[in-house]
Length: 67
Image 1: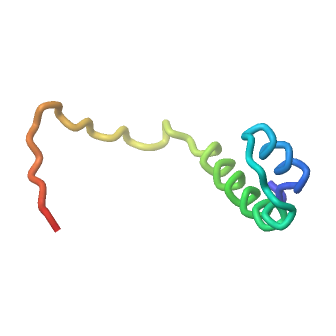
Image 2 (image 1 turned 90 degrees about the horizontal axis):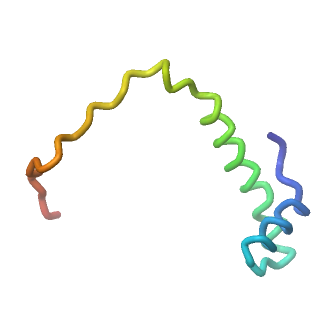
């Protein structure tokens, strides 16, 4: 996915009721593009190609350390 268009970010900010300055939009648009690209990669992952995680038994006491 290409860098996010500043107009798209303005529309998203308006929907989220965020008051972003022009400077913030220019700075955040490329970052949002990177985030969306990461989700695109995750969306291509085939979960059936991996083993399922082992469930943690309920009610089992877990030792906790304080640090």
